[in-house]
Image (tube, rainbow, N blue to C red):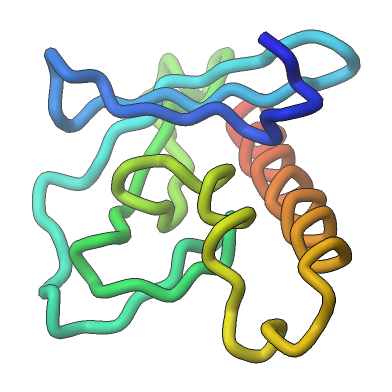
Length: 131
């Protein structure tokens, strides 16, 4: 995979609808985690925001995803969670869905900035899982 074209790789498992995966490059190596979507979703009439890509959507476009912590904490059932785009396509959204407050700026500046911020937030989530 060419990581220059991919900040974060995310996808839902087609055989297990509540399962998904997030992969990001950490120290030159891909690091991935399995995440689980909440059993219920928010109302489509509710506004919600994906925390990693900061894209506003309807409530059913965002889901609470949890991941089991690594090590002893994970064996004890401890998890960490965050609200993420339900389809896990944050990397695509930071390139195509520019928030209104950024639309007056040059896209050549906005897209790399949003991509770097997405990567930073996903790395923070990965780090919280690996603690």
